[in-house]
Image (cartoon, rainbow, N blue to C red):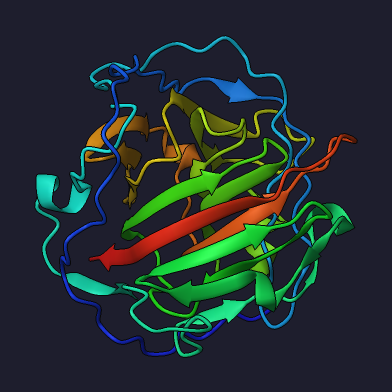
Length: 299
């Protein structure tokens, strides 16, 4: 399939004031960022949803014993409001969305999924995705009707992305996830099966994970990862810095994941997706919701 062509996006304001986070008494949690650890996952890639391919995350298998990465600081359980972009001096915003409209996501910036859900289960519906009050909201119901969307802007190889997100209600069967997905969907199914999940809630409201997919299922090591105990119900700033030599993840401006192995660094053009994916386990599903304050892309 030919690579998708990016459409011009309105340049968002560089730094509007973040939404306040509720005060938390929880202490900082120790970091666990094993870039060297891998999972023997059997990840199923997404079914294609109109009008754009819809990436779908696979269930996470039992994780191998992790080894904390060096020089990775603890991340606070409640959001500090710090941004990797300001902490690290990433410069001006070059693309993104502040979600300042009301109604549906800006069609010039996003393609909203409409079709079958993960592994053909449930439904991705346009009416599950709304914008209002300065934020994007994606809701998932008890029957697996949920949503997601992919960016038309910043379709590029390498760069920096940062997204402010909270998960107001999170059944473990729903995975809120921020993804860098190949512009050419074939790159997500063949060869290396490249995909960077720079924030995925795959265990209810108490944990966030980072997955860097480095091989297709059945080809040995499938991804490197990190996981962090964190209150995902609070607003946090999740960021990824992707260069030819490394992939680094940040939460609230603090590094929590890094992979510098040359063979593990994606080298195809990618773009942002935002998804609330349903992974039914056989039990009842509690309706869930994720909110996104903004998405910002830096050079």
